[in-house]
Image (cartoon, rainbow, N blue to C red; front, side, top):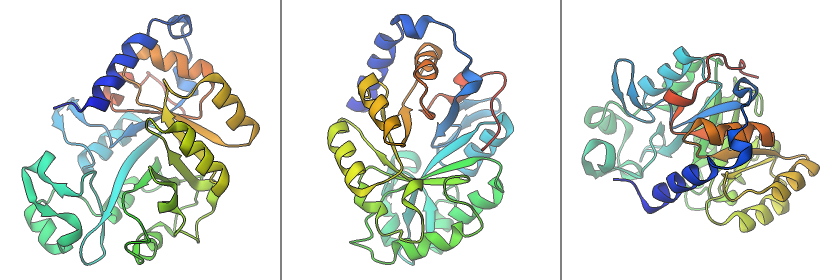
Length: 265
């Protein structure tokens, strides 16, 4: 069932699709599309679940520039890719809470949830990774040390970025440059922008409907990268291309992907 935020986003997509900028055709190959939670939904071979190896493999087959994914730690400190803290919404197992379950038990109960290393091995540097940190290092001090070693073979900024809805969640990753940190805004864009500047993180992502021209201009002047989402139709994608954002996040990659896309980089 769609959440209230999802319904608002869909309404914004319908409304912004009517603007003149959205109706002016754009070269969508110029924008870096990011598949939010992978290429999920109705795929060519059936329905694909979000944040699964199948969803990321489909991204690679389609030539998607980047994929966003969510990281939690199991009880024994293994990083796994799953959005929710529990396994109820996708797998009908609300009794399984990831932070309270050892990886071996999680794998036996819900084998579709991948370990971060499995995603990295599948990707092999072919697609940019947007890794959302879902937990706080202040509550779980080992969090950065349990995630960072898996990223050693990758170059921050070139191969991946770290994202969080709470900018402080990224502060514990002191071996990764701040330029590779993306602070994500929901309805709190002004507050996230203030924190982003105070912490000197390298990028901001937020709703295409809430990040206006003045906001984009100021972020560019400050040398920060910008991502917007969640785009649901080609008209709003046109608008974001014309606005010159760095990344466009979407849950609709299966219908939005243009015939040719830029390579990773």
